[in-house]
Length: 131
Image 1 (cartoon, helix red, strand yellow):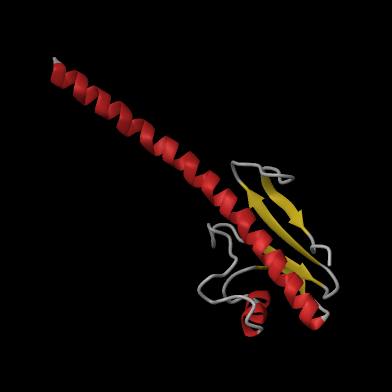
Image 2 (cartoon, helix red, strand yellow):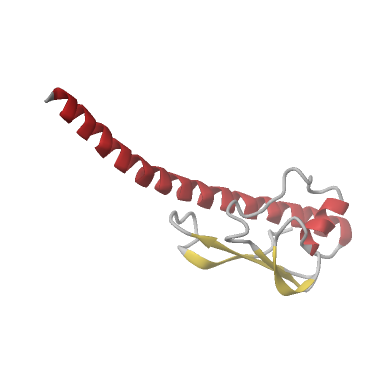
């Protein structure tokens, strides 16, 4: 009888752990995503102060290791190839960047854990930090 109770308890725990883990993993991705956005904003500000212009991307582009904005920041030694400000769930979700050189928009998702002024969904936008 004790063995049955022990097995039942272990089965219940085994069923609950993946659910809890999923929730924490998603929250962690949301927190890391906002961190990547903020890091990208600071890096773009530094680039703007050096060049007087933001990297131009007339159409919204996914921010990946090969995107124009990242390669521009890497060539200016503002971002290391080993520490890129990317979405933690890329390529499933990506940060989007668009700029005319004078200003920019970064669009990103928050899936489970709204933070600060960001809401759930993929319509969160940030703009240049004040200079």
